[in-house]
Length: 58
Image (cartoon, rainbow, N blue to C red):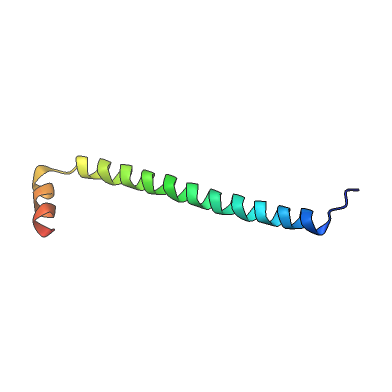
């Protein structure tokens, strides 16, 4: 059985936290890119009249 000292446990906690934060950050970037791509696709499929109306509202 492996015996972890206090330093090993500290390193384990720090690397786990860093891994968690990195995964959240990367996941957010992927979701944002997907959302932007879907928004652009939706805008591209709109008629010219709808696009002009949206631009007037801005």
